[in-house]
Amino acid sequence: MNIVFFGSDDLAAFHLEKLIEADCRISACVTQPDRPKGRGLKMGISPVKIFAQKQDILLFQPENIKDEKLQTALKELKSDLFVVIAYGKILPQSLLDIPFLCCINVHASLLPEYRGAAPINWAIIKGEKKTGISIIRMNSVMDGGDIFFQAQLPIDSEDTSATLRTKLMSLGASCLCENIHKIKQQLSQAIPQDDKKVSFAPKMTKQLGHFSWDFSAAAIHNLVRGLVPWPSAYTYFSGKILKILETELEDNISLQAHGEIIDINKDGFHVSTGKGVILIKKVHLESSKAMHARSFLAGHKIRVGDRFS
Picture (spheres, rainbow, N blue to C red):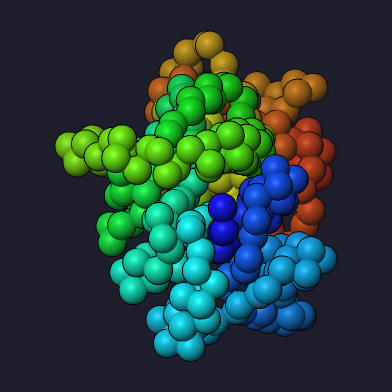
């Protein structure tokens, strides 16, 4: 099977590597252009480009995905399948129509739930107990195509978006390699998504991380886990942003004011919330470095009874 691969980040590069290991023929890769990144504006190169160059795979980095020269070049490859994973741009219908069979996408949710850019984060933030991957036939609706295959994965109570992403990366690559040669036989068997069950997973923003201590302990815990490593859940301390990096739920009930520190021990400090108590274990104060909660308390003379705004 002749495949053109679209992808950009490390998750996409991992899937590409596994396809190569499974003896799939990758005739070309399409990835994002190199762009300046970080404070030093050092030129950023996508992991897919790095891997493709090592494997001597034909590479395209279009600024405009609708570019006619790109589409002509892709048509000349006479591919059976386009595989699209974390590419970063929506493919127009003119591209979707190029491969002989279809374009497929591996999405990190049990579609039609959590369509969009950040399904892993939102599954944790919303307190889901399970998630999974979906392999779909792409159409003009974002993540709205018919489903070829799905696999479930439980979400552990202490999973973060980082740990869950690693698990789904492995699951997605395994399922893709196992099923990619079956696509031709499954074209007529793909199952349409139920539009009544659609939910969305929009991009992460820094503003999303700002929480209120009026939230329940469970909601704060899920937000913290869902926003690791970026953009992080945060509150304010002495006018500075205080990122909350690690928490633990407690069973006890508190009648103290929301945001009040009710206990300090070797594991961190307990804070009363809108419903329940949460243990803060690791923090990162603006203009400082990430540290254990006890180190933070010691350096700022915080005591039981003090209250976060």
